[in-house]
Length: 207
Image (cartoon, rainbow, N blue to C red; front, side, top):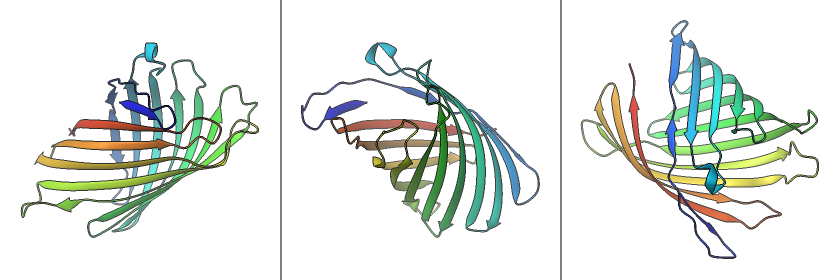
């Protein structure tokens, strides 16, 4: 990932590997639980510690286009301000369009038990590129808004914006490949704003 401070116009580059093993179990046609894990492997020498999280979801399908969910998460930032998070989420889909709205409560170490509160809103689409619907164009945009910072006196308001475009190929019912581009704005009010550019190669497999 290359990060460019807007004021200084300096750049740095790095490569990250993200693994996301997940186990989902259906309780009935509309209810499921999911254990989601992630391992984001970085280079600490570049100031980017490895991150791991373990997240347990409970999901309820309300209708064909709407699902409600809640989760609890333990996030380990390689010794740097680990967190416990709880979250509530609504996901929707209509035709090729999809949306996700998530409310997060964040409890970070060394914050005196102060709860942070953040809203994440994402809209996107999965647009078929062929008649068999094996190729898709998938644009996304997601906004992060901090309502309450876990640090007293910390920034509130819009803190981050992510936009992503990708082309995905459904190889089979169990395998999907993706190539995309992510642009991320970090909008810290008291620091230099940065923009990151990341080409992404992804593989999604189910068993």
